[in-house]
Figure 1 (cartoon, rainbow, N blue to C red):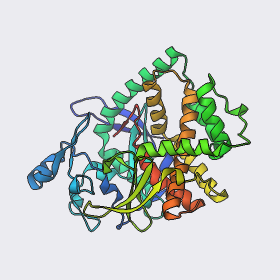
Figure 2 (figure 1 turned 90 degrees about the vertical axis):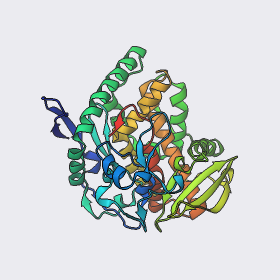
Figure 3 (figure 1 turned 60 degrees about the vertical axis):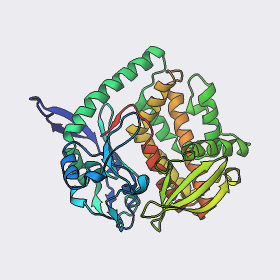
Figure 4 (figure 1 turned 30 degrees about the vertical axis):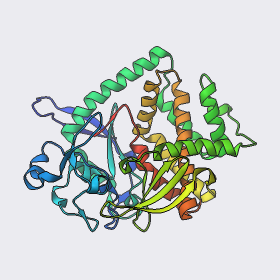
Length: 384
């Protein structure tokens, strides 16, 4: 943790806040020139950034749709990469938006501030590049006023959430939940335990990890169906902006769209055109498990998720939406188990189409495919 200080515009007092850099400690991050993955995310244009684009490129300033519309940069054909991406290079790099500058770092405000790393960025896996903490500190400094505003609001939301949990009798100490997962992370990478955790999280008043025994006779058909439903839900959109994107090792932008029980694999080109590659019946994709080396990578990712404030915030958001019916223990353990099941099914789908395997490289590719969606999940806090 490191303390940071900033002053809100028009305010005399200083606002102090802690920043947690633990997820990115010791990491090096690069930006592969061939990738352009971040340019598929439509960036918000902040008020102070608008004059440049309004003066020089007014035709490329758009208003997004949805419940909370905002000013953003246009995308090619309305669904491709940013209009300023040419030959995988940004034409307005020196004037790119704050959100472009921040990728692949995510600044999440809960009752504190944490920097998280988007593992869908291939540059996060090279072990080369710039010191992640040093880069993140510069981004924190630049986002100071926005952080102060977001943190004031998110602290109030978290306080109200905890009060609601205590009133409903479902509150548990989040740090104890994390400690339990940390001590038993390998259980969440084992299908036998995953099956039991998902079952018990829905029927036990308060689940206890210590007493769980793995399923000895796995119902693979039911597990495949559970994983398939989770993954298919995220792919069941006709809007390319809303479906999972996977930038493979050859820098292709792969998209997967589900309809009527069938998955279509498409590749988007630099002009925003979609090209069909292959179809697969969802039921033909069999759930696979990682080998020993792949399991190690999976456990590392489980530990990363377990320490992310945004993951905890997404569990809290689900509890709020469900009217505080589930104990926090069940909601947290169950959500983590469901997340791993979704990831494993996506790994199996990539292996079906692209033969990535189930070893360390295969699991790593599945995480690259999955993590951006994980970070996009609704949470009660705020990404700054």
